[in-house]
Amino acid sequence: MARQIIDLSICIENEIISDPVPFNPQVQYFDHEMTAGQMAQFFPGLKKDDLPDGEGWAIERIELITHNGTHLDAPYHFASTMNQGERAITIDEVPLEWCMGPGVKLDFRHFDDGYVVTEDDVEAELKRIGHDLQPMEIVVVNTRAGEAYGGDGYVDAGCGMGREATLYLLERGVRVTGTDAWSWDAPFSHTAEKWEESHDPSIIWEGHRASREIGYCHLEKLHNLEVLPGDGFQVICLPVKIKGASAGWTRAVAVIED
Image (cartoon, rainbow, N blue to C red; front, side, top):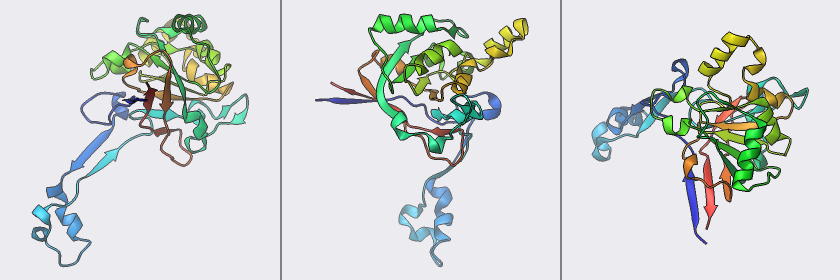
């Protein structure tokens, strides 16, 4: 049996705009030449020329928020409560069993940027791929944002999952979802236009807020979803364990056994 591992994660890097400007990651690189003196400080009397090729180590200093790069959001990110009044769990409290399971891909690339996916849309896509949702499956959503990644318009690209579409998944036992867009919800720029017209606060972050009713996690800024089938693969997305945090970075992968 052949095993194929597909990387579903983006890099943390300086060059690509993967977040709104105030939240962009900053990576500072220190090469072997720059750090020889650092290494010598640990060994009194050691000189740079004593080191092989005069080299120290390569290290990086990184300024991040927990939502940079491909990451898993905990229910605590969405609200202070989940499951209709329980304290929302943080990323270090998320059951690891939630983070490994059979994967299902919903292909919503045909929806316009800013479109809010409905329950009917989810049902139609599941029917198209011939899949009946099962508890603890991990559902990932392929949007137009996947193709936009690497360009300046990524943050504003892709459709979003609405409250009713999210609850449709959660009511069937799904506890981890994911998207290749910047946000599980529709991009803020598009929602802001609707807010200008309606001033209805229920449209703001409606997919995230579904966790107040049924607690769940979701992955954001996934990559390579277009190469996945509708089902028949496993997703692994174990988060970095950060005490009391709202999210944790993950090297999410899909595993296909042929």
